[in-house]
Length: 73
Image (cartoon, rainbow, N blue to C red; front, side, top):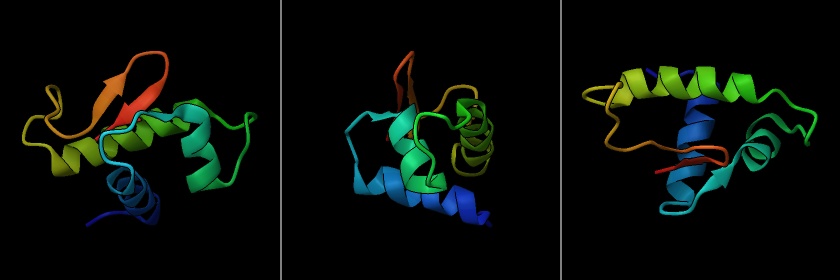
């Protein structure tokens, strides 16, 4: 079971498979915020999403962090 935000994150990432999505892009697409949004929220929701879809959330197979930039799937 995914929350609405987790679902939006997952569908956004799947639609952009292989591309690195910046924090600002994710904030704009999922929350509707510009650069003033809180990237800490992204980390919290990504961690929650990883716990639900990854076999080992500490060593993710699907959702990769691109340090300093964002995430990719």
